[in-house]
Image (tube, rainbow, N blue to C red; front, side, top):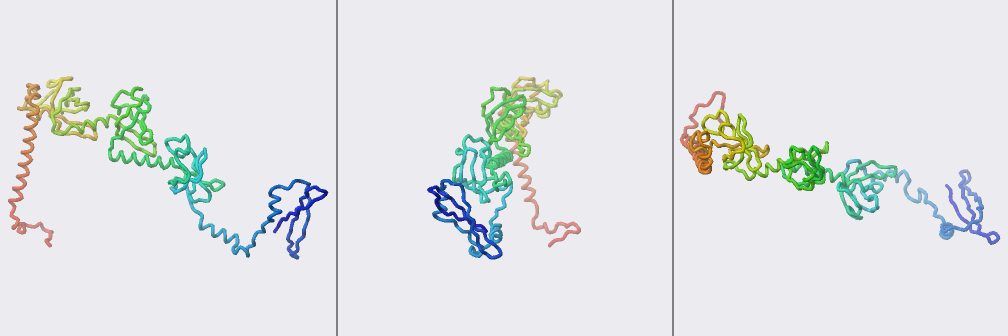
Length: 383
C-alpha cells in the first residue's frame, strides 16, 4: 500500500516541492523513502492544505470492523429492483430547463424529460412540476451507464384518459368537444386531451370550415387504445337528445319525406320515423302512395322507439275514429287525433286491468286445501 507525504523546504530563496513516496516491502516490512524533486513552482491551495492538515491514512480492515466483501453483500439488501412500466412514488429534487430529477429510491435520481411532462405540452418545466412535489411516475427506460432511469408523467395521463373514455362509452354518456379542423372525411376534435374523429356521415351539419370552433354534443362509437382510435357521432347525440322529448304513445306532427312500398317516412322534429304499411289503416292498404303524398303534413302516434339506433315507429291506424278513415279522409283523422289517442290509451288500460282481474280470479278459484290431492307424476317424490 502506498502513502504520500509533502516536505516543505527552500533552496536559494526559491520555493521547492518535494514528494516522498513510502513503499512497503514484503520481505522485511521496512520502508524506504525516496525524495523526488519537482521543478520550482508556486504551491497550490491544495498543497498548502495538505501541508497544514496532513494526509489521512485509510483505515485497515481490522480497524474499520468489516471488509469490502461484507460491505458489498450488505448493499444487496438495499438494491431496489425497478423495471420499465413500473409505477413508482417519487419526489422532485431538482429542476432545470430540460426536465427534472426525481428521487424514486433507486441508485441514482431518475430523470423526467420535458417531453414526458404532460400530454398537453409544456413551455416551462416549472408550469407542471416544482421541487419537493411528490407524484406517481412511470418508469419508461432501463438504467443507463450511470444507473439512471427515465420516468414519465405523460404516459400515466394517457392511460387514465383512455380509461376515462372507455368509461364514458360504457355508460353511453354524451360528451362535448370543439371542432379543431375538418377534412373530406369528417371533423377532428379533442376529447379528454385525446384526438377524436367524427365521420362526415355522423355530422349533423355541413362538413366545411364554418364548423371549426363549434362546440358539439357527441356520442362514442369506438374507443380503441391499442389502435389509438376515438370515433364519435354528432348525429347520434342529436337523435338521442330529441328522442328524450318524445314519449311512446304521444301524438306528434311531421312532414312526409318519402313513400316506399313498405311504408311512409316522416320527419318529426329532425328525427325520421316510419309508418309501416300495416300501421296506416285498419283497412288493407295496397299502395301507400295512394294514401299520403311526399311533403304533406301528418299526425301520428309514437308506438315504439329505439333510442340506441335512433328509430321511431309511428301509426295513423291507432288514430282512426272508424276503420278505414285514413283511406277516406286523412284530414278528419288528424282533426280528432288527440281525442282518439286518449280513447286508445283508456282502452289499453281497461284491457290491462281486465287481464289482471282474470288472473286474480283464476288464482282465487283454486282450492288450496285440495292441492295435496292432485296426482303426482311418476318418478317424483314428495318430501
